Every structure is written in C-alpha cells, then in structure tokens.
Image (cartoon, rainbow, N blue to C red; front, side, top):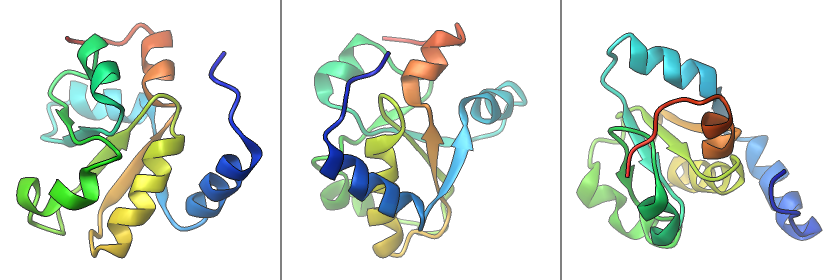
Length: 124
C-alpha cells in the first residue's frame, strides 16, 4: 500500500489529471519490449532514484525538472514518459511541462510501485 496523501495534495493531482495524458505500466513495458526508443524520466527524489529505477530512464527530480528540462530535452515535441512512486508527482510534472510547451508528455499511472509489483526489471 502506498503512502496516505493529504487531501489538498490529492486535490491538485486530480485537477492536473484532467489536463494530462496518462499511460499504464503495462503499456510502457510493452513499448520497451518492442525496442521503442523512449525518453523515460524519473521525477522522484535523488534517494529514491539511487535505490532503483527503470532501465534506460534519466533522472530529473520534480524539484528541478522545470529548471533543467530545456537543457536536457530541448525538443518540445519529444515524447516524454514521466514516472514517480505512484503516478501523482508525475501527473503534476506532466501538467507543468505541458504549460511549458511540451506537447507529448505522458504520466505513468501507478508509477514504480506498480512496475515493481509486476516484477518488471529495475536497475540501480
């Protein structure tokens, strides 16, 4: 079971989810299995990233992604798949990146918890 989140946090997440596109853990895994070249971004904290993350992912934590995204991923048409622990922080980041002009942003619903729960591969 994931962390119990505060009501106001959940409220802003639900509002963000009205404006973004989400994908599933299974869809991301299937796309990776097909060899698609995906830009997968882990938006969790540095300590979470250090523990484990999706193979091939890059790390741009929620606290710095808006500041650093244009340098790391300057093409606003790049498809970006964001994930966090459960899909809440990534939804907020997806909303923010869309406001910055990124047009192909997806938030992975369920996050790394669902990925881990399905026994999908992780790396450190």
